[in-house]
Structures are given as structure tokens and as C-alpha cells.
Image (cartoon, rainbow, N blue to C red):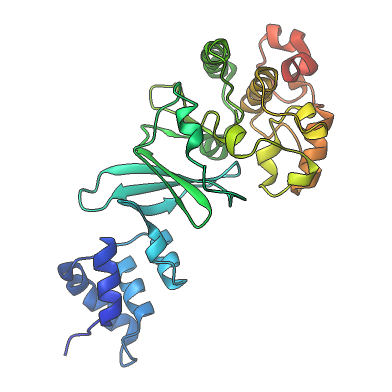
Length: 309
């Protein structure tokens, strides 16, 4: 007799759009091989669907942990959580039913999530998400799929970028910032974990004004994010708790340029408090000590000029 999955599990994976009856039938041989004469437990079928290539390793892990329902955000089915050390987390996803590729961003837990979507109306310069919802005290935003990768992921995989690649990126981002500031806006979170590098070699910013709106105060009393989330904070935001500003954006842009050229975070420290202290001090090693092909113009500018306003 062929193995039969538990009815509750069948209902779950069909409701989420993970597997139809024919997919479960295809996974039956894997379930039989995994279980032999043991009872057909839900965990066996999760592993069987993974071996059959029907679900991803991330989805299997969430199902094993009893977090199947949260895999569905609106009509977006989460497939992979991206490595992210910034403000919030990014996921690759597909639209349930059509299979259209999507990106999903999830905020950290919010003290008051009731007005979490209000910043969208205040940031018309940035792409609007396809859908926004608040769930479990977090803001979830759904965007079309990217043609490239998260900038932090690029650095993790490839190391530093060549100066000839960095300078056009920074120049274009500086022009966008200037335009944003002229209209009275601020970005508030310029970092490798908030920007995407497209296949065309351009930087894409989706979350401008989000962190500034959802988290107006930073500093030692707010050391609840991953350490790298503080790398581009201006010192006055840490010491004095000042809100995001154009000046702080320009400081962050300098830190971003340093990181892309050096291929490492601009500050060191194993935990959030240590990273905040380093960011507060605002001292960066001279770039010419770290890279051999630094253009003379940047070498002459020096690390203090590059990282500070």
C-alpha cells in the first residue's frame, strides 16, 4: 500500500500552494524510502517533498518548526531568506498560484505597528510595494523580483568592488540623494543591506525613509539590531539621538563608499554595543593601507574626508 500523508499536512501544503495532490504522489517514493516501516509522520513528508525538489530548504525548516502558515504573506509564498545584517530581513518569494517571482521585506518587531505603513505616503520618491501589511507586530512589504542581488550579498560572495565600479555607483546615488534632499526628504538607511545592485550595474533603493519613520531614534538605548545595522549611522545620531537628516545621509554615503572599496564593514565590534561605539567614534583606517588600486584622488582625500561630512 503506498504511503499516505497525514490529512492535516495535505490541507496545509495545498492551502499554502506548496504541493498539489500530484506532487504528493510524486513524493511518495521518497517518503517510503525515508520511513520504511515507521509511521508516516508529517516530518517524513516534509523531507520527501524537499528531496523531490518541490519545496526549498528554508520552507522545509519552517515546516519542521511548525511555522508553515507564516510562509504565506498575502499572496507571496516565501522561498528563501536572504543573508541580511541590516534593518529588517529580505526574502525571495513567489506569488501563490502564478509562480511570479517576488521580493519580500520584513521589519524588526515594532513597538507600535498600527501606523507602520504611514511612511509610504511620505516617501513618493521611492517605489511603492505591491502590497503592505502588518502581522505579528512587523511590517511586511512585497515588491516585484529584483534583476540583481542585495548589495551586501554581492560583497559576501565576491569581496570588494573595484574603484572603477564603485565611483559611478556612488556618483549616481549622490545625485539621487541631492534630488531627494531638495524635495525635503531623507533616506535614513543607506547601507549594503538596504540597496540592491541590478544586473545593469545600478543601485536600487526601495526602503528610503522607512527606518527613519519606523525608528526615529538610534543610539545605545536601541542596540537591538544586528551589529552591521549601525555601520553607517552618523555619530550625532548615536550620541544625541538626533533624527535622520540630509547631513546624516551624506555621512552614510561616505561609509558606504568606504565599505565597497575596502570589501569589509567600516566598523568592527562583535555585538551591537561594540559596533555602536565604533560608529560613534567614526574613525576608519586609511583606504590606501587596505587596497592597492586606490585612485590618487581618493587616496589624497583620506579616510576622514571620505567618511565624514
